[in-house]
Length: 425
Image 1 (cartoon, rainbow, N blue to C red):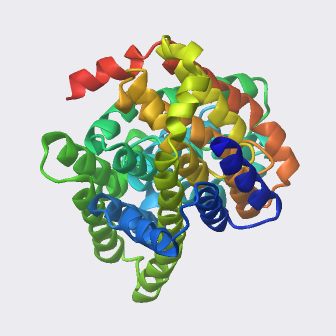
Image 2: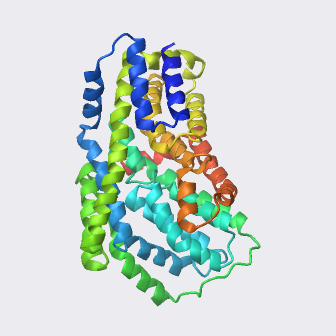
Image 3: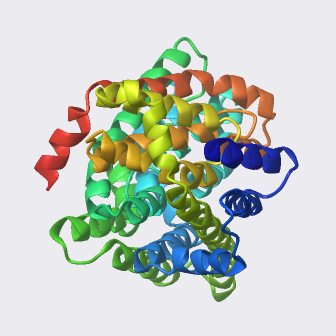
């Protein structure tokens, strides 16, 4: 009955058009009334305590780093390197988009920011080159959702904070799956673009490629600093986020000279707005999470899924399927915050490695940003690139299926994550 109350109020709030944060508070109040445990102070206390976590400081700083990279010219120079290396190939701008998506994912951790930056630069060029609008936008959107997977990933920071597992371990474990997602997009784009009469860019000489690489070197150093520092234990994920933001500001202002005081201020404002939304969602989700624990809801869900508890693969597969389905109607952040308090105890009870589980769960949630009717990344690419949304919804399908295939491989063969993680550690 407790689960029915929680789910019914949540669905009702979404149907009525309530913001997800307020719907989560409504769920908390409904559970309190159901348990005859209503106390307004508990709501405020859990919201405050839910965000009063040093680890979560990484979120606003990684968001700020992404904003400063876009405004300071770091993102554009990464795209120029990819264009110099792959622009001459048939369908080369597609490979440029994939390469740039992978590199930028290792800088910002934000699918929305990366997709918007890439769409603004590449979609006009792809239109002029005769590339189909739908496939171009779909490829950029599918490349954008690599960002929540490749470190530094905001989503993995949140999972690590809630599950109380090593965020550095999550970052290391996500590297290989993120690269596999990019490889799957290369294969899918090769299939989609075969026979296309696309314009290609002039082949760059080795000197021109090296020159583009030299210009982008300050930007390319950032992921090496962040991941390398985490790997050797020089700093924590939160400190890494601060270093990323400071580094992006210094390079954008003094190396590239594109980050002015005005654009820096605008970046701070946008990062503040985005961070406020994310942190408020985390705070409200902690109210429901606390009451879910008090109501012993995870135990009820475990009893319901008891037939799958003896098979970790089946259990992970069921959770992935549930996440993909809910991702069609919920945005990534609220979806994760709603499900984590329920699925993390399931993983613990089934003896699943929570680092492996966190990566798989994050990928499943990220792919929800590519599925209608919500599909936030699709909407961003359509708006920025001035492409009809219905065309992108069709164009993204081959790339979505390719990334789902990678997710299925990770469910069937956990060693794809656990073995490289052991080596990296």
